Amino acid sequence: MEETSEQTRGRETEPTALGRGKKDKSRDVIANMEARLAKVELAMADTREMDLFEQGMEKGLEDLREQIQDLREMVLVSQVQPVSHEEFVSFQGKVLSMLASMESRIEALATRMESRDQEARVMATQEASRVEVPKPHKFSGKRDAKELDNFLWHMERYFEAIALMDEVAKVRTATLYLTDIATLWWR
Picture 1 (cartoon, rainbow, N blue to C red):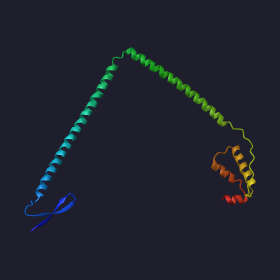
Picture 2: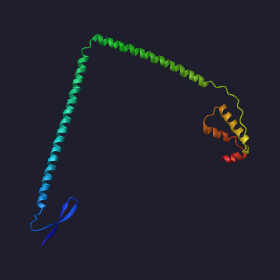
Picture 3: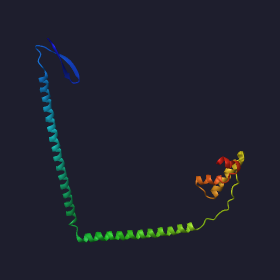
Picture 4: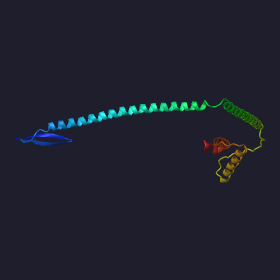
């Protein structure tokens, strides 16, 4: 009598026949799994060792950086100490003379800025000579191209004469010169 069992390999399931001469392979599978588990444990141990080694290297690198910084400071101190008192006084004198020169330049610039500010205030308080600008004619909405063109041309000249540059203000001002039907159209 032949019995049928299922054996799993990966994701596939294959029926196998168990007969008189066939041995149960579950022991082989368990032995295989134990070998694989041992390999994984070894790999994990190696990874832990590498992590510890890396941490040790980082600590050593940090110590080395501190030693280098200490050496730099020692070299700087050793270079500064031999400077003689005369050299220091000479250097200090140069720095003070440069500082005085810079202060005088700053004062001169401040004076020039103040005079320019006063000139600007004087110019701002002086009124520009005003030119009498005739107001443009009103536009009634008559359907005549020449009359419309003349109205627009007069409005442009008027805005130039009164120095009106803002487009929104120009539109609002132009609408004040619309009458009759043109006012209704605008609304």
